[in-house]
Amino acid sequence: MTTLKRTDRSRALILEAADQAFRALGFANTSMEEIAVRAGLTRKTLYNLFSSKDEIALTLIARVEATDAGYRARIAANEDVLPLLAAVFVDSAGWCLANPSLARLALSPAERPSLAPPADRPTFQGLVRDILRLGQQQGVIRSDEDPDFMALLLLGIYGQAMLTALSTGSFSDGEIRRIIRLVVEGIGPRAD
Image (cartoon, rainbow, N blue to C red; front, side):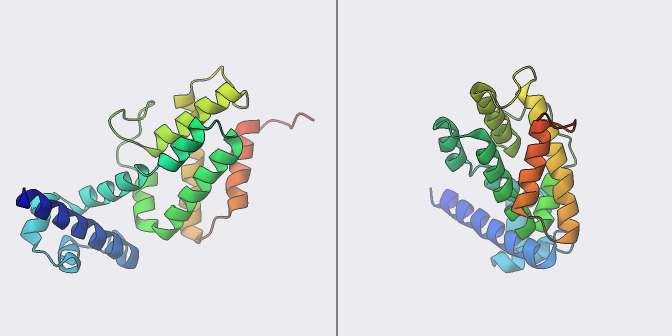
């Protein structure tokens, strides 16, 4: 039992140290040695718990994706979809701008996402898909298209916009609302 607690404590120290190092130095400039030093652990301990800094970064990203309980409660409360979708993307943009190294990894993963999000863990893709499903039920999102496909489409547009924002260092709430409006209304002429 003590070993498990020590392992969990070491993992937490590593994740915290990596998060700080990625913010301060960037992903590319952070070494496993740097993470070990910041965590106050040996490199051997680090490598026993994580095979690479990529694995550490993906664990940090997954930890953020797993914090969607507040949004899930808003979905369950049948909240208006468009403001909810805007809130999700505004919060995500804030995280991306505060964590540019990790955001670049999350926004351009080595492995392309599949149509359906993984069923074994919470993901941003799954959250967006579920909000779009709610929008279909509310009649504000078209119901003749698969919400998994629409989520990938929306995330592709958002991802490219965020990668641009990361290179310029800014992205406003208004720009996110504009992206959502354009996606929902389409790019054809406005129906007045």
